[in-house]
Length: 128
Ligand SMILES: [Zn+2]
Ligand SMILES: [Zn+2]
Image (tube, rainbow, N blue to C red; front, top):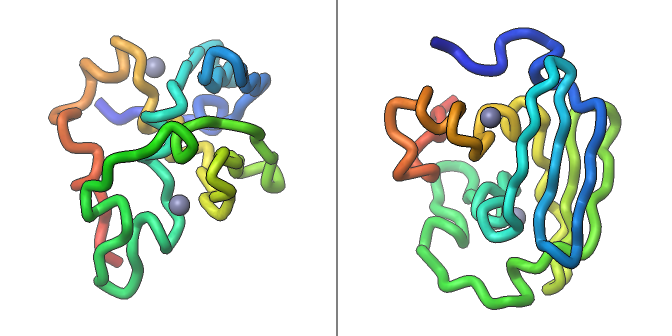
């Protein structure tokens, strides 16, 4: 079973960042709702610094212990119609999270159960 195959499934109709709760909630075009906690979201950061580039490991690949500042969501910017860029309390804001990625990494029970292996979110990179 493949998730996020229809365009509606990866199109948010509502995005709500709850800074006090530290969560990001997205309602999708197919009526599915995803709630990401800030720490989990920080680990998903797809930017070159966090993820590495040109075959080199990124900062998150070194398994750092995230500080409270590094995992505190202060703002969320919409990037066109395809991604969001969360802004973190440590000033990091260069991670563009495409909606397809977010939908694919939906942490709800239903979606988690549909994934073959959810324990390692960092081994999903597809070499290009
Ligand atoms: Zn990053
Ligand atoms: Zn889900």
